[in-house]
Figure (cartoon, rainbow, N blue to C red):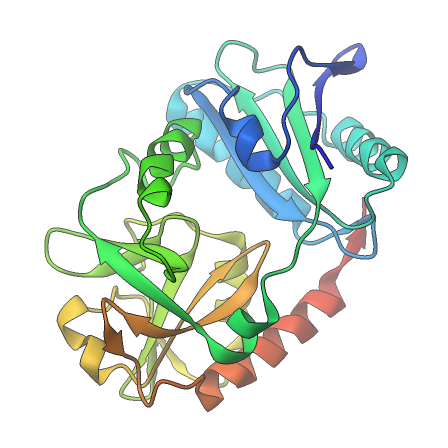
Amino acid sequence: MPAIVKRLTHDGLRNVSYRADSLNAAEDFEARDGVYTVSNTYNVTQTLLLDAHLDRLEDSARRKGFVLLCDRERLRSALREMIVSSGFGDVRYRISSNADAPASLLLTIEPYQPPPEQAITQGVRCVTTDAASRSDPAAKTSSWMHARKALQANMPAGIYEIFLRDEHGCILEGITSNFYAVLGGQLYTAGDGVLAGISRRIVLDACRDVLQIRLQAPWHDDIANFSEAFMSSSSRGIIPVVEIDGQTIGDGAVGAETRNLQHRYQSWVEAHLEEL
């Protein structure tokens, strides 16, 4: 089932000149000087922290040197119209804009596919790389979206995510996620040099009375000492990580703290859903 792509202008929703089978395929047609955000819906037309996504989208545009002109009510209405008319049910959506057309938005939707149940319950294997960096990690830019494709294309078999290391050997974030490690009973995650993920703010809120939070990127050399690790993203929630660069995390199973946070995260989501 192909993705649906529309451009929202002052005249309303307009068709685009290309066809894409998925959000990922549609990325190839997007300008490299733009900004974007991605999330998914619940119960067909409910969203989570959409205003936070749009705040970050506007901030990313400012960091790229242009002012995004976004009528949020028109955007919500247009996104709802696309979702309802598609018949997809829950969708994964991307909202994009670029410097050449800051008064228009590109809206792309596809049927939402949740992460594999095995990833949620048994965890995933990941690797790290120091081969890529963002010019401005705090901005969610189309240039990074295109740059990461090379990393994804060469991802080893059985690997779910690639984490970025800085020059000091700290694990910053994934190419599509934020990263967390439990070490000495504390939760470590980078405080700067990363994208402030929307799901990340939920994680930090949900765990405040569970674990002490250290806004510090964990060291790669400490992997053997991690008792647990996980990643988060808006479309996937919390995904446990049980291996990094061939090193087993803890006992190789999803830990109790991660399971607890998964439940708390889901409860937070259910309590904060809103209609488009």
